[in-house]
Image (cartoon, rainbow, N blue to C red; front, side):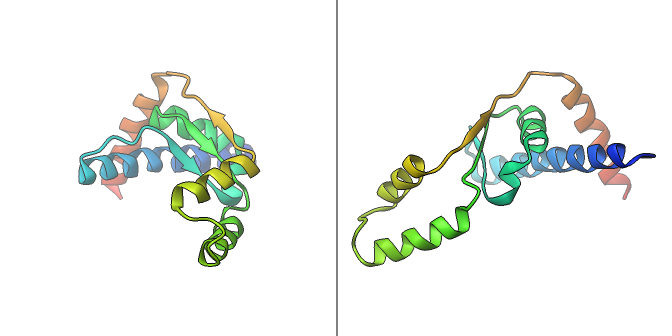
Length: 126
């Protein structure tokens, strides 16, 4: 049980990263396709601890950003409707060229595999 504020935050971020791992497994199983990179957009992309934990727990690179993904998406849909941008690919190019993203690489720690086993047991118990 977390006893301090820091331990509570760490418990929450580790739990989120491990839940992402579970959901990633479900997505790959349902689609039959591997997910090679995890994209985190919006305000959550600013949480570097969670982004690194996600990369480690999921053993996939995480690309974080853009922070204002919703506003950019809305704007680009309007631009596409006005025929200033012709395709989804072009819209993605505009976002890549106009936004900062940060990449987090998995560290390869086996501790996350052990944690995932404990997390799975906890989920089954609840």
